[in-house]
Length: 168
Image (cartoon, rainbow, N blue to C red):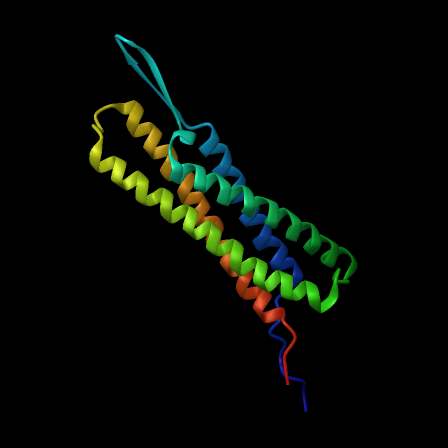
């Protein structure tokens, strides 16, 4: 009788998903930290940065945490792919499983908070001002990439669940 098919995902596929997560989050953080808007008036220039808003700062924190975790897991996955051995054994599988869950939720909440605030701003401000519209569009782009990073992190979470040892 043939053994049952394995539900574990190839380490190469896991590595690819982690790299995609990292790239999405890296581009997102670059867009976010370069997002500024300057209002020119008779009284002087008023510069608005993403750090002026709590939701965007939360998004930045979520992305940075996601980047750090994804970089760590990518290095471990590269080691697994290159040597065939997992560092830490079954204990590391638990870290993968729970860490992927936590990080995906952190990324989802960061994206949700930023999307909500941006949509509220779009309703309240004069969108005929191209500078404000550009600022909000860049915030939406950064948030969308974070959301895409969340989707890849959620896929990693599913893959790590497949890798857990089966209990009798």
